[in-house]
Image: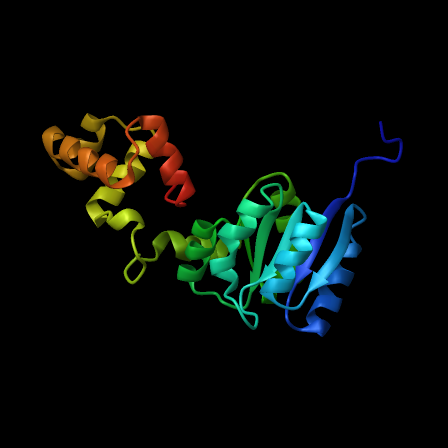
Length: 214
């Protein structure tokens, strides 16, 4: 047993600007229970650092030279499942936040708010909890999904039905909420199961969570 209190939350910091990394390191290390293990200046280096150190949290700049940060998130998560990823970006478009969460990130922090939000986001991430800037969260909830590919080619109506299944509604409750017949809801549900390959309610709930639909 450790007599020196809880183990620190370990962090790898990935941003392509050295001056930004220096400022972020200072901010993070002012939190007494944080330890920055390493820094990275591009995605490939971030992958190597995560593989070498297996930190609790990777803070990942969304736009760095080379490989796309977004497209690298799933493989990073697969290679180091114990490392949670907090995206740090100037990109305040809700579509990017949605895509980051779908890819496997657990936090999304705007650089302009890093001084007030990053420490909280890292702490929540280390506990396996999601963080999203409240204002951006509200915009994300209100933002239409046009222009973003629906997972597994689900139609907008099928997405609506899936979301309601995922929060526990029965077919008849979904029918009344969406002003459809129960038979139509059953038909949508069958199509959802066929397209996603998930047949049980539990599997559909898990699918909805994986794709940040709930």
